[in-house]
Length: 335
Image (cartoon, rainbow, N blue to C red):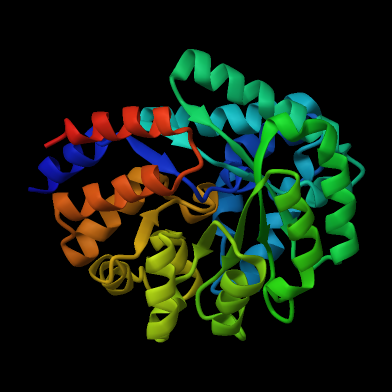
């Protein structure tokens, strides 16, 4: 049965809606970029980098995460970063992706916005042509930076709106509620962009954050969102709106020491559009297939449950209706 489920997961055409491109920076790539850009690293080998991945909550993870991306300097660096991820995605039969990128984490280091987004787009075009992986890019704002900085980066993005499908909100949630960014998200909406925000697991004031996402920001999707299960009214409203919830099981196991398997199943039982994603797979050592396999290993998720989670991802994605129909048709052929 384990081998059969492994093969079944591989055969599923999949969509990934919650993956941070900076979080796909593998240790070996960190070293090659550091050498190319003449950057001295704190660690001597990729194995030492992995050994340093000692995080147990969101802040401890973010400290390591932001330090590592300093090796990303040139357009070619960002092209390589994204293409390496797309190759891994293609190998796991991921056919559609809506990846995040964090421009403020790069412009604050002196890397130009254009350098970042042009490198990523080159990889997107190549992945579509050569790997069969379609993608639409989401620009995230860092919530522990100011709303003014978010607005400045939205302005930087205006010449590149053809390269971006939506905006998101990530990083440290403590004392940084969605309301802080209401104005910039309203402007993004006026520009025709889709809206999503992180509501990570067990964060301070998390239920209030989810309510603000629904009632103030009027998001099109919620990233993570597991704590909505603590409030029946929130669950009912999320289900009524058909909002996607981009859950990241292996990431949750690092941040809250639990895959949240029971919670994911509870979402499905309530008719909520839960989806499965890898979040920062280079750091959590698990891409899409490993996340799905973890649910099987931890909670005996069935083939039908995995297909429902996968179908949800296609349905709540921001792909075109034609793309969705094609992806779901391919999914329906897997048994």
